[in-house]
Length: 247
Image (cartoon, rainbow, N blue to C red; front, side, top):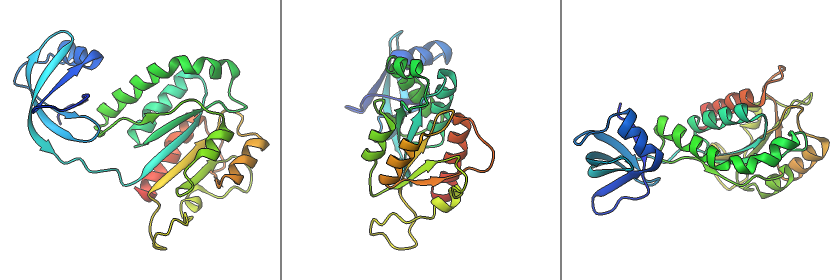
């Protein structure tokens, strides 16, 4: 299976790969004229042939336009900030599982030092999303939105999509029940939701105030079972469930 890379644009039947990706392709993968790779600009997908190789840029000629189907479901992940290595692992796996947008949350129980340091990590997070999207052969990388307080992110969620808040509280219905809720968007009764926003809390869980604002914003509580999961484990379990049920 051919590797896929992201480029800024296609123009005049050509494209150029620059930056770290070009360096990786040139040095590690030993790029040479005549080799074929897949290129995406986030909208179109092309089979392309290497025409020239330099240290900082690889030039391609476009050979054949490839099918680029749109995702069947758009998933927005509201993800509370946890320890950086685990947060970054969660970003990688969320990308592989098809998330469209990610909003890092500075929750009340997020470690304050991590939340303060998080904005400086955004460029690194963008690279993680890009590299993971290339590895998993996506058409585009997820959009990383600015860090937000949970209350603001809950209120800003699209009211036409299915909104889910993962909860460890006793009595929270299972995720499969939350996924069967209709959005009231005017679609047929048997139609599956085409957009989901899911919020995943930090170690220690959500506060009562965060639960209240989420409920007021239309988020349904959902549980992943009796066991208490780490945040990054909950990301994988919840997204896999959503993709299985709705994707």
